Image 1 (cartoon, helix red, strand yellow):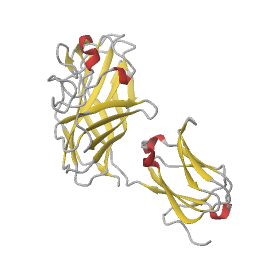
Image 2 (image 1 turned 180 degrees about the horizontal axis):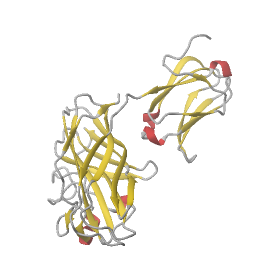
Image 3 (image 1 turned 60 degrees about the vertical axis):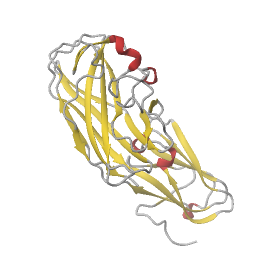
Image 4 (image 1 turned 180 degrees about the vertical axis):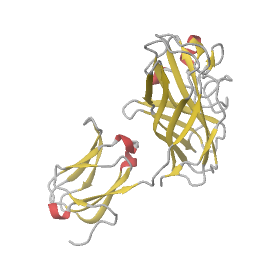
Length: 309
């Protein structure tokens, strides 16, 4: 069997070998002659098993097979390595990676109000997007590699925020948000064509020592992706302080959208509101307490997501 896999990077791989991938890897292609079942398994940087798929079965001879990491619905940044399992002809088993386009990050900076934040309280950072350019077909917006940065009391904080994926689905009649703890990803599904504000991502920060008011700047940075060309995003974030909260994101009851018709919560509160904890909101960060459950937004930041087919 001759030839090479039809992509740029290739390397021979023995069965059982660990292949380390760049975080931007989108898919893996195989060129092999299998003498036994050949499978692949994906692991994160801590060695935790994420999932796998069959690459070939006994007796197969294929010019190449492709296994899309995104088909596992895992953010590419989660996957650290794959392991090839099975018995194969080493010279004929080749792996190559196809990388995603280089995607630029975007940052949005704001400031906190002058209310100090006492130790024992919680800051709820939350963000929302309004998406334009959607048609009637399904579409996905992703948000990856995000961090929140600020400085206080001589300490520089660099907080990793969860990833996010918003799916605009023809099958959806109402909006729903859940949190996948295994991949640390917010998952929101909304009806296709919805044009209002949609919750994107949120991070709870337990305050372990008193923070002064007036922190400036506070910057949220991340990478937007989409599978749909022509889509644009208006992105904004806010932060509110709570006297009691939960680090179990699925216990928060996060409101997915502003619109009442698309939300199971029939009220006028904003997307990103933790509906199960609204009685504990207080002043601080970008909120004044009362009915300001998300904090106040600064002007939305426009961006065009990186297209990942």
